[in-house]
Amino acid sequence: MLQNGRIKGLIFDCYKTLINIKTDERSRETNQRVSHWMLYQGVRIEPERLREVYKWKVIDRLNNSGQQHPDIRIEEIFAEICAENAYREIDPCWLGIETAKIFRTASIKKLEAYPQSRALLEKYRHVPKCIVSNAQRVFTEQELRFLGLYDYFDHVILSSDHKIKKPDTRLFQMALDQLGLEPHEVLSVGDTPENDIYPPQSLGMNAMHIHDAWRYA
Image (tube, rainbow, N blue to C red; front, side, top):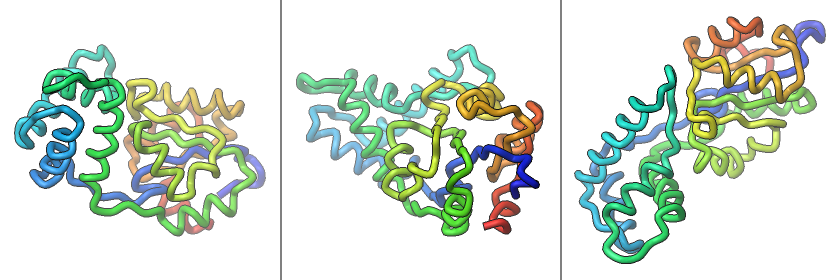
């Protein structure tokens, strides 16, 4: 994978590349669990309304971002919902963060590290590495940590921090800047050609599908 020393840095996507995940955020069960938890935090909103309000707030935030490939911070959406539906005094900022975590927990059906990806990270432990992922910092960082993946990386760039998503090439440029390497010295690895292969290639980087990269573990 590291061609004769020409590749000096690696960029990895996160979900479906490092982490095998399945979620169901729209289900009644997920929203009912979150709604019930929110009651104990001072917020009253029915599960069906929670699902619809969340959906439309996300759509509105994305449509008014001014970005071609926008992202949100999910905790900001939940902070708004909590503030608008509180039945007693609350701290919306703190509660937005905690609700985002509960929402994630309630929606997860599968969450595990790919053993092939872990083996790949271990093999190239001493090569500078960066994650570039369309993901929410509020729970993704913790998932990387408790799955034992976070410390393999020198840098972690998540779309929610910058409110732009891949395929926006600015995220990959940030990774190059943080790694301190030239584009031809870096290999991007991911599962989605539209996000992980073509954008870095347009900057002059090398790119490989994760299933091809596993052969080098």
